[in-house]
Image 1: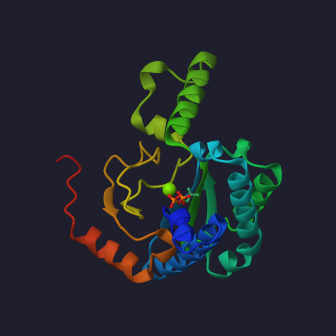
Image 2: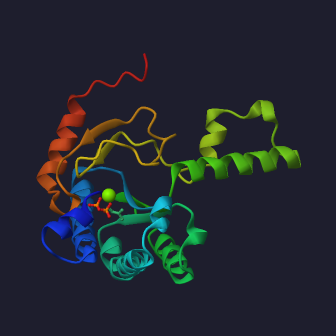
Length: 221
Ligand code: IPE
Ligand code: MG
């Protein structure tokens, strides 16, 4: 969900206004994805590297995330959305961690769509954490080094049990992955859009899905 800052700047508005508009887009796209039968939608909301931005920016964004978790819960429940969060949760403010746990628990039986917020998320951090926990199991003797397979690695990722993404959409004209789902995107189709995230429409989302359907996926075969 890239381009919130530039969107605000172009309008002479404070940066947080761009993120608020971006949150509106997230709601619109979630609704549209659910309508179309998309089962999983992962939103890159806050990266591990974003912690290094200015403290006031981080505080503003945490405020918005707090607001979203409190105010969106009702509509998540109403729309059959299951909410999950992937990332280094222990770095988040404690009250946000609690809100996440509550939202995950309260929506766990919903099945229309699963919305996964990548929050305090970094793919290298995720893979490092997976390597560490596999190493611990080997050291304890509950796992054999020779038995480590791609499936075992998968089971130690934050995304354990969640299918790999079919399609990645990145907005705002940037053409890079930025430490996002590196393992999971081995065979994901990419669609890049020039549109800044707050301006991203359901029509453009539909077009991205049409583009995806025209792709031939061969998985190296
Ligand atoms: C994207 O907005 C969302 C987050 C990183 C939280 P940016 O803050 O990256 O917006 P730009 O790239 O400055 O426009
Ligand atoms: Mg950006």
